[in-house]
Length: 260
Length: 261
Ligand SMILES: Nc1ncnc2c1ncn2[C@@H]1O[C@H](COP(=O)(O)OP(=O)(O)O)[C@@H](O)[C@H]1O
Ligand SMILES: [Mg+2]
Image (cartoon, rainbow over all chains, first blue to last red; front, side, top):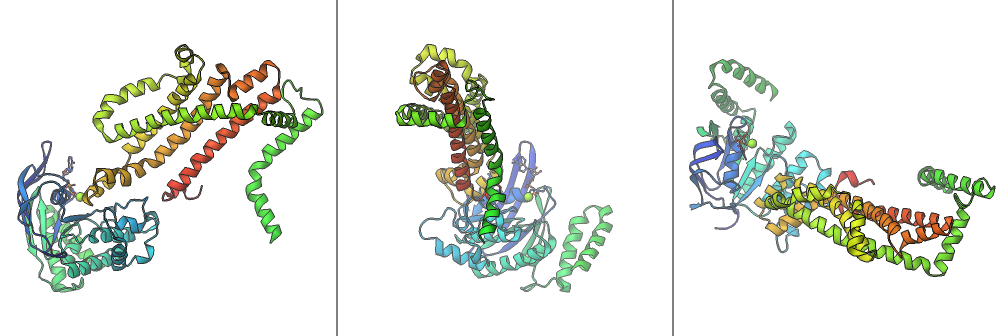
C-alpha cells in the first residue's frame, strides 16, 4: 500500500471512562479508506476523547479500535493530529516545525508542503509572528509532510474568523482530494461538517446517535438549497431533542441563512 | 548627518551615563577641595592610582584569579547540581515526591549562616569558599529549572508524541527549550548570589582574593584599595549580568518578550 492511500478505522463498542465518569459509552464506527467523516456534538460529549483514542494517546476502557484490521496498541503511527491550537513549537522556525521528527533530507519536502499551503515565503519566520490562520496552515503542512494515512482534526478551525475558515476548508478539501488520506474531523459547526464530509456523525451522551451521508457533489456551495436543507435537518435533529429548544433552533437556522 | 548622529547618541546612549559621570565629577571636586577626608572616601584619581599600582606589581592578578577560580568552580558545581535536580524532579514525578520537600527544607537555611560551621569543617581553605558558593547557587538554579520544566505546555508534549518524537527528542526539542526562559532567570539570579557569597566568604575568612584584598587594606587604612575592591565586585556583577543577558538574547530569540532587549 503506497503513501497517500487512506487507512481504515473501526471502533467496536468503544468506551472510555475517567474515574467513574463516562466520556464515551459504546461507540461503533467504521471509517472506510479515504473517507471523510465529520463528528459533531455538544461541547463535552466526548469528541476529543474519541480522536485521542484513535490517535492512540489514550486507551479505551472497553471495546477495541482496529486500524487496517489490526488492534491499535500504543500510538497510532499511521495517524497525524491537527489540534485546535496549532501547537507549533515557538522556538523553532516555521520550516523546522514542519520537519519536526523527520530524518534524512526533509528540507525540500518541507518547502514543498509549505508551498501547498501557500506559506513557502514564511519558511524562516518564527511562529509567533504568524496569524492564527497561517499557524493552522503550518500545522496542516506539518501533519501532511509525512503522508499520514489517517488525519485526525480536532476543531482545527474553531478559533479562526469566518473568512479564513472558509479558505482553510477549501484547502483541506483540496489536499484531501489530492492525497486520499482518511479524515476524521471534529467540529461544532454543522455547516463545516456538511461542507467537507462524506458522512456526518452525531455523538450524544457517549454514543453515536446519528449517521447522515452527505451525497452533495463537490465542490459544495453554501448557497445551494440541498446544502441548506441538510444543514437544517441536522441542526433540527441536534437541537430538537429537547422540545422547548425547537423554536430557538429554527430561529438560529433562519439567522444562519441570512448570514450566508 | 554628523550632527544627527551625535544628537542620536546623546539622546540614546549617553543619557543613562549622565548621572554617574556627574556624581563622579562632584566626588572628585569634593575630595580635591578637602571637603571629603581620604579616610572616608579617597578621590577617584587616588582609586585609579591604587588600581594602577596593584596591577603593575602583580598583586591584582593574584587576587583576581583566585576569586575567579572560586566563583566559577562553585558556580559550576552548585549550578549543575541544581540544574540536574530541577530537570530530574520536573520530568519525573516520583523523584519530585522523594526529593522536593527535603530540598525545600535545606533551601530555607540561609547558606551564609553556615559560615561558622563551614570554617569548622574546611578551615579557611578553598573548599570552604567553593562549598558556600556552590550551596548558594544551587537553589536558584534548582527552583527555576523545576518551575520551567513544570510549566512546559502539556499540549506541545502531546503533539511531540503524536509526531513521533522519542524521549530524547522530546527532551531536547520541547522540555528544555520550553523551560529555558525560566532556567535563564535562575542563571541570572545564581550569578548574583555567586558574587555575593564570595564577597562575604572572602571578607570573613580568606588569605587571598578580592575580599581579602579589601579587608587587608582596611587594616592599613588604605581606603583607595578598599574602594577599588568594591568597584571590582561591582564590575564583575555587571559582567555576570551581561553574560546572562547575552544568553537570553541568543537563546530566546523566538520569544517576543526578548526580541527588543
Ligand atoms: N483526562 C481527563 N480526565 C478526566 N476527565 C476527562 C479527561 N478528558 C476528558 N474528560 C471528560 O470527558 C468528557 C468529554 O471530553 P471531551 O472529549 O474533551 O469533549 P469534547 O471534545 O466533545 O468537548 C468531558 O466531560 C471531560 O470533562
Ligand atoms: Mg474537544
